[in-house]
Image 1 (spheres, rainbow, N blue to C red):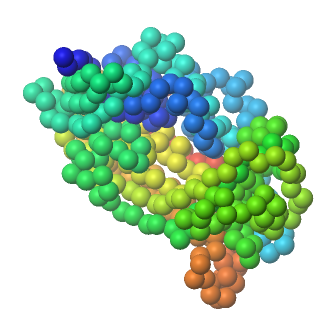
Image 2: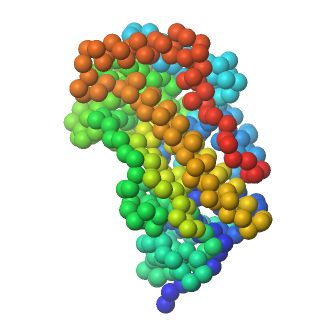
Image 3: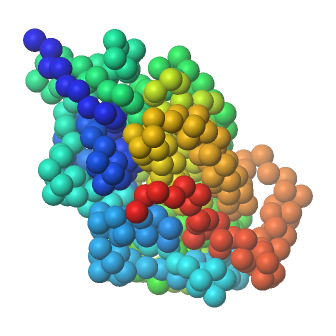
Length: 395
Protein backbone atom coordinates (compact mmCIF):
# COMPACT_ATOMS: atom_id res chain seq x y z
CA UNK A 1 0.00 0.00 0.00
CA UNK A 2 1.45 3.36 -1.04
CA UNK A 3 0.80 6.41 1.14
CA UNK A 4 -0.23 9.30 -1.13
CA UNK A 5 0.11 12.90 0.04
CA UNK A 6 -0.56 16.23 -1.67
CA UNK A 7 0.88 19.66 -0.85
CA UNK A 8 1.84 22.91 -2.51
CA UNK A 9 5.58 22.69 -1.77
CA UNK A 10 7.35 19.43 -0.99
CA UNK A 11 10.64 19.95 0.84
CA UNK A 12 13.29 17.23 0.99
CA UNK A 13 15.42 17.65 4.10
CA UNK A 14 14.71 19.04 7.55
CA UNK A 15 17.97 20.91 7.94
CA UNK A 16 18.18 24.66 8.47
CA UNK A 17 17.23 25.47 4.85
CA UNK A 18 14.22 23.18 4.56
CA UNK A 19 12.75 24.07 7.95
CA UNK A 20 13.18 27.82 7.46
CA UNK A 21 11.55 27.71 4.03
CA UNK A 22 8.56 25.80 5.40
CA UNK A 23 8.25 28.33 8.22
CA UNK A 24 8.34 31.37 5.92
CA UNK A 25 5.91 29.83 3.43
CA UNK A 26 3.39 29.04 6.16
CA UNK A 27 3.48 32.66 7.26
CA UNK A 28 2.30 33.49 3.72
CA UNK A 29 -0.45 30.85 3.79
CA UNK A 30 1.45 28.37 1.57
CA UNK A 31 1.29 24.70 2.58
CA UNK A 32 4.35 22.46 2.61
CA UNK A 33 5.49 19.03 3.73
CA UNK A 34 9.04 18.57 5.02
CA UNK A 35 10.50 15.05 5.08
CA UNK A 36 13.75 13.66 6.47
CA UNK A 37 15.08 10.10 6.87
CA UNK A 38 16.38 10.81 10.37
CA UNK A 39 14.54 10.90 13.68
CA UNK A 40 14.02 14.15 15.54
CA UNK A 41 16.43 12.90 18.19
CA UNK A 42 19.14 12.21 15.61
CA UNK A 43 18.76 15.66 14.04
CA UNK A 44 18.82 17.56 17.33
CA UNK A 45 21.55 15.36 18.81
CA UNK A 46 24.08 15.75 15.98
CA UNK A 47 26.38 18.42 17.39
CA UNK A 48 27.55 20.89 14.75
CA UNK A 49 29.24 24.24 15.02
CA UNK A 50 27.48 27.33 13.80
CA UNK A 51 28.21 31.02 13.43
CA UNK A 52 25.20 33.11 12.45
CA UNK A 53 25.56 36.47 10.77
CA UNK A 54 23.51 39.41 12.03
CA UNK A 55 21.13 39.32 9.01
CA UNK A 56 20.42 35.60 9.61
CA UNK A 57 19.67 36.20 13.29
CA UNK A 58 17.31 39.00 12.28
CA UNK A 59 15.34 36.58 10.10
CA UNK A 60 15.09 33.93 12.85
CA UNK A 61 14.09 36.40 15.56
CA UNK A 62 11.68 38.58 13.59
CA UNK A 63 9.78 35.59 12.17
CA UNK A 64 9.41 33.89 15.55
CA UNK A 65 11.78 30.94 15.20
CA UNK A 66 14.08 32.15 17.99
CA UNK A 67 13.94 34.96 20.52
CA UNK A 68 16.24 37.87 21.17
CA UNK A 69 16.69 36.66 24.76
CA UNK A 70 17.99 33.32 23.47
CA UNK A 71 20.45 34.66 20.90
CA UNK A 72 21.91 37.69 22.70
CA UNK A 73 24.13 35.65 25.07
CA UNK A 74 25.72 34.09 21.95
CA UNK A 75 26.75 37.46 20.56
CA UNK A 76 30.42 37.98 19.69
CA UNK A 77 31.87 41.33 18.69
CA UNK A 78 35.12 40.23 17.06
CA UNK A 79 37.67 37.58 16.17
CA UNK A 80 41.44 37.45 16.44
CA UNK A 81 44.05 36.53 13.84
CA UNK A 82 47.28 35.15 15.30
CA UNK A 83 50.31 34.99 13.03
CA UNK A 84 53.99 35.90 12.98
CA UNK A 85 54.00 35.82 16.79
CA UNK A 86 51.37 38.55 17.09
CA UNK A 87 47.63 38.85 17.73
CA UNK A 88 45.37 41.15 15.68
CA UNK A 89 41.72 41.78 16.64
CA UNK A 90 38.87 42.65 14.27
CA UNK A 91 36.36 44.84 16.11
CA UNK A 92 33.13 44.07 14.26
CA UNK A 93 30.86 46.80 15.73
CA UNK A 94 33.51 49.44 15.12
CA UNK A 95 34.22 48.27 11.57
CA UNK A 96 30.69 47.33 10.45
CA UNK A 97 28.17 48.20 13.14
CA UNK A 98 27.29 44.49 13.42
CA UNK A 99 28.22 41.35 15.35
CA UNK A 100 28.05 37.58 14.89
CA UNK A 101 26.44 34.90 17.03
CA UNK A 102 27.99 31.57 18.04
CA UNK A 103 24.72 29.71 17.57
CA UNK A 104 25.49 25.97 17.07
CA UNK A 105 23.59 24.46 14.15
CA UNK A 106 21.91 21.79 16.28
CA UNK A 107 20.56 24.53 18.56
CA UNK A 108 19.18 26.37 15.52
CA UNK A 109 17.51 23.12 14.45
CA UNK A 110 15.96 22.64 17.88
CA UNK A 111 14.33 26.06 17.59
CA UNK A 112 13.20 25.40 14.03
CA UNK A 113 11.66 22.01 14.77
CA UNK A 114 9.95 23.38 17.87
CA UNK A 115 8.53 26.21 15.74
CA UNK A 116 7.13 23.77 13.16
CA UNK A 117 5.49 21.67 15.88
CA UNK A 118 4.18 24.79 17.64
CA UNK A 119 2.61 25.90 14.37
CA UNK A 120 0.94 22.51 13.90
CA UNK A 121 3.02 21.21 10.97
CA UNK A 122 5.65 18.77 12.21
CA UNK A 123 8.19 17.48 9.70
CA UNK A 124 7.73 13.85 8.67
CA UNK A 125 10.67 12.13 10.32
CA UNK A 126 11.78 8.72 9.09
CA UNK A 127 10.73 9.45 5.51
CA UNK A 128 13.51 8.66 3.02
CA UNK A 129 13.24 10.27 -0.42
CA UNK A 130 14.57 7.95 -3.12
CA UNK A 131 13.95 10.15 -6.14
CA UNK A 132 12.08 13.14 -7.50
CA UNK A 133 10.05 12.45 -10.63
CA UNK A 134 7.55 14.17 -12.89
CA UNK A 135 4.00 13.28 -11.89
CA UNK A 136 0.73 13.86 -13.73
CA UNK A 137 0.10 17.14 -11.89
CA UNK A 138 3.59 18.30 -10.99
CA UNK A 139 6.80 16.97 -9.42
CA UNK A 140 6.59 14.07 -7.00
CA UNK A 141 8.82 12.87 -4.17
CA UNK A 142 8.95 9.08 -4.07
CA UNK A 143 10.39 7.01 -1.24
CA UNK A 144 9.78 4.86 1.82
CA UNK A 145 9.16 5.63 5.47
CA UNK A 146 10.86 3.95 8.42
CA UNK A 147 8.34 1.10 8.44
CA UNK A 148 9.16 0.26 4.82
CA UNK A 149 5.88 1.65 3.49
CA UNK A 150 6.13 3.39 0.13
CA UNK A 151 4.99 6.99 -0.16
CA UNK A 152 4.40 9.55 -2.90
CA UNK A 153 4.19 13.28 -2.26
CA UNK A 154 2.64 15.19 -5.13
CA UNK A 155 3.37 18.93 -5.12
CA UNK A 156 3.24 22.08 -7.19
CA UNK A 157 6.94 22.55 -6.42
CA UNK A 158 9.72 20.50 -4.85
CA UNK A 159 12.68 22.07 -3.06
CA UNK A 160 15.75 19.91 -2.49
CA UNK A 161 17.31 20.97 0.80
CA UNK A 162 18.75 17.52 1.36
CA UNK A 163 22.40 18.31 1.89
CA UNK A 164 25.61 17.53 0.09
CA UNK A 165 24.47 14.00 -0.83
CA UNK A 166 21.26 15.40 -2.35
CA UNK A 167 19.08 13.03 -4.40
CA UNK A 168 17.19 16.06 -5.71
CA UNK A 169 20.28 17.12 -7.67
CA UNK A 170 19.78 14.11 -9.92
CA UNK A 171 16.42 15.44 -11.08
CA UNK A 172 17.85 18.90 -11.75
CA UNK A 173 20.94 17.89 -13.73
CA UNK A 174 20.97 14.10 -13.90
CA UNK A 175 23.95 13.92 -11.54
CA UNK A 176 24.74 14.35 -7.86
CA UNK A 177 28.14 15.84 -8.62
CA UNK A 178 27.63 18.01 -11.69
CA UNK A 179 29.11 21.33 -10.69
CA UNK A 180 32.11 23.50 -9.91
CA UNK A 181 34.49 21.84 -7.47
CA UNK A 182 37.70 22.45 -5.56
CA UNK A 183 39.20 19.98 -3.11
CA UNK A 184 41.73 21.08 -0.48
CA UNK A 185 44.90 19.15 0.41
CA UNK A 186 44.30 19.56 4.14
CA UNK A 187 41.58 19.03 6.72
CA UNK A 188 40.88 19.85 10.37
CA UNK A 189 41.60 17.64 13.36
CA UNK A 190 38.93 18.68 15.84
CA UNK A 191 38.45 18.07 19.55
CA UNK A 192 35.77 18.74 22.13
CA UNK A 193 37.29 19.38 25.54
CA UNK A 194 35.90 19.89 29.02
CA UNK A 195 37.51 23.20 29.95
CA UNK A 196 36.65 26.88 30.42
CA UNK A 197 37.05 29.16 27.38
CA UNK A 198 40.63 29.95 26.41
CA UNK A 199 39.55 33.17 24.72
CA UNK A 200 36.52 35.44 24.81
CA UNK A 201 36.50 35.43 20.99
CA UNK A 202 37.44 32.99 18.25
CA UNK A 203 41.12 32.77 17.37
CA UNK A 204 42.17 32.06 13.78
CA UNK A 205 45.86 31.23 13.68
CA UNK A 206 48.43 30.70 10.95
CA UNK A 207 51.86 29.48 12.05
CA UNK A 208 54.70 27.46 10.56
CA UNK A 209 52.77 24.37 11.70
CA UNK A 210 49.65 25.40 9.79
CA UNK A 211 46.18 26.52 10.81
CA UNK A 212 44.62 26.48 14.30
CA UNK A 213 41.11 27.54 15.34
CA UNK A 214 40.16 28.08 18.98
CA UNK A 215 36.38 28.14 19.31
CA UNK A 216 33.84 27.52 22.06
CA UNK A 217 30.56 25.74 22.77
CA UNK A 218 29.70 27.18 26.19
CA UNK A 219 31.33 27.96 29.53
CA UNK A 220 32.28 24.31 30.06
CA UNK A 221 32.86 22.77 26.60
CA UNK A 222 35.35 24.09 24.02
CA UNK A 223 35.91 23.20 20.36
CA UNK A 224 39.41 23.41 18.88
CA UNK A 225 41.00 22.42 15.57
CA UNK A 226 44.41 22.14 13.98
CA UNK A 227 45.33 21.62 10.33
CA UNK A 228 46.00 18.02 9.34
CA UNK A 229 46.14 15.62 6.43
CA UNK A 230 42.51 14.97 5.38
CA UNK A 231 43.14 11.21 5.58
CA UNK A 232 44.76 11.31 9.01
CA UNK A 233 43.88 8.53 11.48
CA UNK A 234 42.12 10.21 14.39
CA UNK A 235 43.92 7.89 16.83
CA UNK A 236 47.42 8.54 15.47
CA UNK A 237 48.25 11.36 17.92
CA UNK A 238 48.30 11.45 21.71
CA UNK A 239 46.45 14.03 23.79
CA UNK A 240 49.79 15.68 24.61
CA UNK A 241 50.64 15.96 20.91
CA UNK A 242 47.23 17.48 20.25
CA UNK A 243 47.78 20.16 22.87
CA UNK A 244 51.27 20.87 21.53
CA UNK A 245 49.88 21.41 18.01
CA UNK A 246 47.10 23.67 19.24
CA UNK A 247 49.36 25.71 21.52
CA UNK A 248 51.92 26.24 18.75
CA UNK A 249 49.36 28.25 16.83
CA UNK A 250 48.35 30.86 19.42
CA UNK A 251 50.12 33.53 21.41
CA UNK A 252 48.09 33.04 24.62
CA UNK A 253 48.04 30.04 26.97
CA UNK A 254 45.29 27.52 26.26
CA UNK A 255 43.18 26.13 29.08
CA UNK A 256 43.38 22.36 29.00
CA UNK A 257 40.98 19.67 30.12
CA UNK A 258 39.58 16.25 29.30
CA UNK A 259 39.33 15.62 25.55
CA UNK A 260 36.18 13.57 25.04
CA UNK A 261 35.71 13.72 21.28
CA UNK A 262 38.12 13.65 18.34
CA UNK A 263 37.38 13.77 14.61
CA UNK A 264 38.91 14.67 11.27
CA UNK A 265 36.95 17.05 9.06
CA UNK A 266 37.46 17.03 5.31
CA UNK A 267 36.15 19.99 3.32
CA UNK A 268 35.82 21.35 -0.17
CA UNK A 269 34.29 24.12 -2.23
CA UNK A 270 31.38 23.08 -4.45
CA UNK A 271 28.65 24.90 -6.37
CA UNK A 272 26.08 22.86 -8.29
CA UNK A 273 25.87 24.01 -11.90
CA UNK A 274 22.09 24.41 -11.93
CA UNK A 275 19.69 25.30 -9.12
CA UNK A 276 16.40 24.75 -10.91
CA UNK A 277 14.71 22.53 -13.45
CA UNK A 278 11.02 22.97 -14.18
CA UNK A 279 9.39 23.25 -10.74
CA UNK A 280 12.21 21.71 -8.73
CA UNK A 281 14.72 23.95 -6.90
CA UNK A 282 17.89 23.34 -4.89
CA UNK A 283 18.82 25.22 -1.71
CA UNK A 284 21.38 25.02 1.09
CA UNK A 285 24.08 22.34 0.97
CA UNK A 286 22.26 20.65 -1.90
CA UNK A 287 23.21 23.71 -3.95
CA UNK A 288 26.69 24.39 -2.57
CA UNK A 289 29.25 23.63 0.12
CA UNK A 290 32.04 25.85 1.38
CA UNK A 291 35.00 25.22 3.69
CA UNK A 292 34.19 26.22 7.28
CA UNK A 293 36.99 28.79 7.60
CA UNK A 294 34.73 31.62 6.43
CA UNK A 295 31.72 30.63 8.59
CA UNK A 296 29.39 30.93 5.60
CA UNK A 297 27.59 27.58 5.17
CA UNK A 298 24.59 28.05 7.48
CA UNK A 299 24.19 31.69 6.49
CA UNK A 300 24.30 30.91 2.79
CA UNK A 301 21.41 28.47 3.29
CA UNK A 302 19.35 31.33 4.74
CA UNK A 303 20.07 33.46 1.67
CA UNK A 304 18.94 30.68 -0.69
CA UNK A 305 15.76 30.23 1.28
CA UNK A 306 14.90 33.93 1.17
CA UNK A 307 15.21 33.95 -2.64
CA UNK A 308 13.12 30.76 -2.95
CA UNK A 309 10.52 32.10 -0.51
CA UNK A 310 10.22 35.35 -2.47
CA UNK A 311 9.80 33.51 -5.77
CA UNK A 312 7.19 31.07 -4.42
CA UNK A 313 5.19 33.79 -2.66
CA UNK A 314 5.12 35.78 -5.91
CA UNK A 315 3.90 32.73 -7.83
CA UNK A 316 1.04 32.01 -5.42
CA UNK A 317 0.06 35.68 -5.32
CA UNK A 318 0.10 36.37 -9.04
CA UNK A 319 0.75 33.15 -10.95
CA UNK A 320 3.94 34.66 -12.36
CA UNK A 321 7.10 32.56 -12.65
CA UNK A 322 9.30 35.63 -13.25
CA UNK A 323 11.07 35.38 -9.89
CA UNK A 324 11.34 31.61 -10.20
CA UNK A 325 13.08 32.14 -13.52
CA UNK A 326 15.61 34.45 -11.86
CA UNK A 327 16.10 32.28 -8.75
CA UNK A 328 19.41 30.80 -9.86
CA UNK A 329 20.87 34.11 -11.00
CA UNK A 330 19.74 35.82 -7.80
CA UNK A 331 21.06 33.09 -5.48
CA UNK A 332 24.34 32.67 -7.35
CA UNK A 333 25.43 36.23 -6.60
CA UNK A 334 25.79 35.59 -2.88
CA UNK A 335 26.82 31.95 -3.35
CA UNK A 336 29.87 32.95 -5.38
CA UNK A 337 30.74 35.83 -3.05
CA UNK A 338 30.65 33.40 -0.12
CA UNK A 339 32.59 30.79 -2.10
CA UNK A 340 35.30 33.36 -2.75
CA UNK A 341 35.39 34.63 0.83
CA UNK A 342 35.64 31.08 2.20
CA UNK A 343 38.34 30.18 -0.32
CA UNK A 344 40.29 33.34 0.52
CA UNK A 345 40.12 32.75 4.28
CA UNK A 346 41.10 29.11 3.81
CA UNK A 347 44.09 29.65 1.54
CA UNK A 348 45.30 32.66 3.53
CA UNK A 349 45.37 30.81 6.86
CA UNK A 350 46.41 27.26 5.88
CA UNK A 351 49.77 25.99 4.72
CA UNK A 352 49.57 23.97 1.52
CA UNK A 353 51.76 20.83 1.62
CA UNK A 354 53.71 22.01 -1.41
CA UNK A 355 54.13 25.63 -0.19
CA UNK A 356 57.51 27.13 -1.03
CA UNK A 357 59.30 29.73 1.07
CA UNK A 358 58.03 32.35 -1.38
CA UNK A 359 54.45 31.15 -0.78
CA UNK A 360 54.89 31.33 2.99
CA UNK A 361 56.34 34.85 2.97
CA UNK A 362 53.67 36.06 0.56
CA UNK A 363 51.01 34.61 2.85
CA UNK A 364 52.37 36.53 5.85
CA UNK A 365 52.40 39.73 3.79
CA UNK A 366 48.78 39.13 2.80
CA UNK A 367 47.77 38.79 6.45
CA UNK A 368 49.55 42.03 7.31
CA UNK A 369 47.78 43.79 4.43
CA UNK A 370 44.41 42.88 5.94
CA UNK A 371 45.33 43.58 9.56
CA UNK A 372 47.40 46.77 9.28
CA UNK A 373 44.99 48.61 7.00
CA UNK A 374 41.58 49.84 8.19
CA UNK A 375 40.22 49.14 4.71
CA UNK A 376 41.62 45.61 4.90
CA UNK A 377 40.17 45.04 8.35
CA UNK A 378 36.80 46.29 7.16
CA UNK A 379 36.85 43.94 4.16
CA UNK A 380 37.44 40.90 6.40
CA UNK A 381 34.86 42.08 8.94
CA UNK A 382 32.14 42.85 6.39
CA UNK A 383 32.48 39.39 4.90
CA UNK A 384 32.48 37.71 8.30
CA UNK A 385 29.42 39.45 9.79
CA UNK A 386 27.52 39.01 6.51
CA UNK A 387 26.33 41.12 3.65
CA UNK A 388 22.72 42.29 3.68
CA UNK A 389 20.29 39.88 2.08
CA UNK A 390 19.05 40.83 -1.37
CA UNK A 391 15.68 39.10 -1.09
CA UNK A 392 12.85 40.84 0.69
CA UNK A 393 9.27 39.66 1.30
CA UNK A 394 10.07 37.44 4.29
CA UNK A 395 8.64 39.40 7.19
